[in-house]
Length: 114
Length: 112
Image (cartoon, rainbow over all chains, first blue to last red):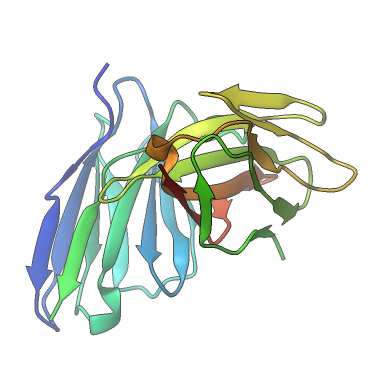
């Protein structure tokens, strides 16, 4: 079974631009979560989607948004990019969103904001 | 609030040495506990998990036991290999919060 895939793997943008990242979950998984990883803040939760509905949101500004499609694929969007948005963005999928479910991670998208 | 305290790194060991990475958590309810590993340039891979008190998770020679009384989930391996060099993250999912809460990560380097 194919794992979680994320596209693109690398992105370079300039301040003020916007960016869209894509995530395809493991087949059959209905929950998709997004995390931001930076050297200073570590791994921080952005949001979770389940059956096209946002179930949970982390403490990030409204510039960060996401959505999930009927095939469970998910996108996240960051508008008006700032230098501090440079990070590795990780997507994770799980069968459902219960606490015992394992989240499986993709390889991430490395975003650099210049 | 919910948090994970993980042993500070970096940790450098010789091949075949014993490894312990300490992890304690503060969580509401009854969390499920996880160890993930991240190799350079990659995402996180699940190493092992435990979903209730006294459960022992194990994989690839790594073990961790869910200790509710001490709110700990320490990672151990009896004999590390060079290929175990990576960053290790302790994490939990708890209560109504469906997201993973992560520790800060421990960089492990194993020398031949």
